[in-house]
Length: 442
Image (tube, rainbow, N blue to C red; front, side, top):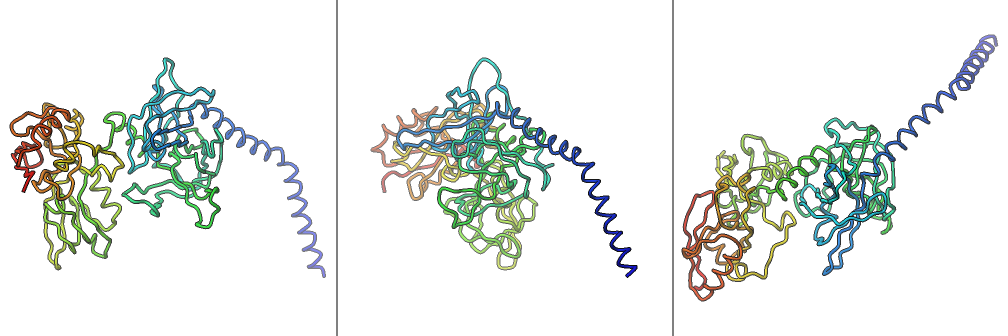
């Protein structure tokens, strides 16, 4: 009995102290909550002027796509998503004050889903600084601002739920898979908007939503994913400097096995084919780097300089072999780039070409800034150019002795030679300068 009385008084004492503590600390708790609340309000108010609504239009295809974006430089450069601007012909942005400005597409990259727009005016634009996304921690606050369902400047808060996330479902091409996951509410139209930390710095661009399959059609809420700011800064800077991201290409279908990456198919005429890779080869090393993850291997190839000889180690029937493979540029269709099919070069030769630009010398090892000609963008399988083994990325210097200075000159020469049985191409590629016979009639 005495022990029960002691226990009762002990519990009463604890509750009394706890009650007093609650009464005493309540103002302190409210101040803390108020400070947190004010911090979120300040971040929203300070960030909104740098955030824009993005509209991409295409008259022929009746494209009318809305999204978000933000200024990341005072001179009018805007970061947004590739999937917002892809296939667009006209672009405009809506500012916080309601004004609408026409925008120019500087460049976009389907693999990272990053795009850059540019608007012009005399005064500088407010902009958001980019944080170091390598320092993002799971559990830290995250603030998303954008235009979901065209509800302009919607602010949602949450935490960083994860880093280094992969979202593979439904993607038809290689994509960087290093997303920041957040539970801050993101929805249709939020894409391209910033994901911010408590300092108002951008830790990522909101890009993807993952939801349960049985979620009602209009509702897209689910886990949100943002492209890390460090990658965004790298791609944005390259797009501003060069207009596009040139990526390397090997040309195989593959799957992961215990020893490495197994080759399932080798595309005819691809770098893999020319370099001696065979079906059932198991790739174990790429330029001295051990490979066992398919996505990592694809990205290693994509980042390889075009024209560079890469050393690939394979296991073939249990024996190790070393192959030297010259990486070419990734085909336009794999990076979402259109090409013109209604041309003489495509109809006659199966060649899609583009003008040579000074920046090409930075990416193609065999080119110099003094070179002139046109670059081969695409080669149609089994067409005359394919059969003549004209490689993608080759520089066409001359046809039948006629110097090729630009695309118009190439089209004019081909137009005049339509009745010829064969053409002699002088090209420059990773194999040096060579002359190739292209048979038009067999």
